[in-house]
Image (cartoon, rainbow, N blue to C red; front, side, top):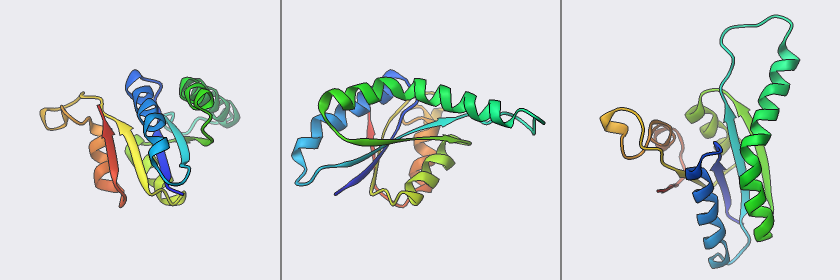
Length: 139
């Protein structure tokens, strides 16, 4: 079973990526083990007394961002697990890929940022440098 990680930020690009994986799933010999990951921005500094509220906020925002992707996978009848991380996007994606023993990361491109990152996006570029597994970029 191929373990696939799909980072989801709630954008059309990430939903297109889910659609791509759904379309390719029947071509694999075995079912895919799909992991959705939403990464939330951490709050700056240490905020005393609000740790539980921050955790709840990140969870709720993550669930909201993951909802359209989960709906697509449910409609396609594909099983998946979902995760919500907090931190730097590229580093968090790489950490989950390692911890979950992911064999392929499938992610969208954004096209924002400096000229060097214009085609891939800075998060995609960072993930390419940080992971030791194939990364499939979906436009």
